[in-house]
Image 1 (spheres, one colour):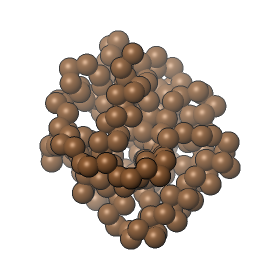
Image 2 (cartoon, rainbow, N blue to C red):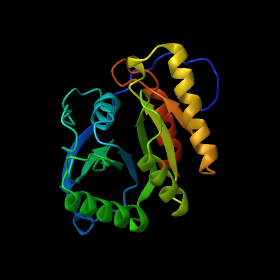
Image 3 (cartoon, helix red, strand yellow):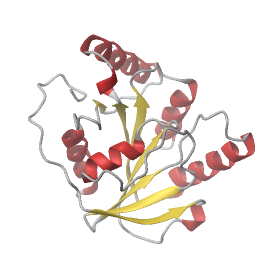
Length: 209
């Protein structure tokens, strides 16, 4: 898989970040008091956030994956390398969740992303099989407007052929131009562990001062 440039794919490195589950915070005020840097996973429901956590840690069940969208209903904290937190945010865009619940998630996410001082990077996952959705564009605009550092992560690339991957990669670069942002963009497969080492390098760039 390729990153935001067109350099050849690096040889896969063994990635296994030491990690442990800390807590679930269903509301912003319940987030743990901590000075540790935070890297967040955001995206639509069922986009592959849990699979990415498991790929980063090389543990198949640290984060529970599900075929049922909308299962994550809190900000789930994982302690990584005893030095930073990975925060799995509730997915957005799942219509079968009651609107009142969607609105509550939206408000808590807005509070967290606009007020939390620990945030170093948001990894915004999108399913590479699908063209950009309106709520993806809205989320990108929100992050940019609030000056939250983020990267676009095109997940589930193992589900497509090379030509289709290139086409969808171009679609999301076009989206970046449309909303007037320029952020790193990666194509990954958690299943095959393609691109995972690149994500680790990106995270390290943002959490190591």
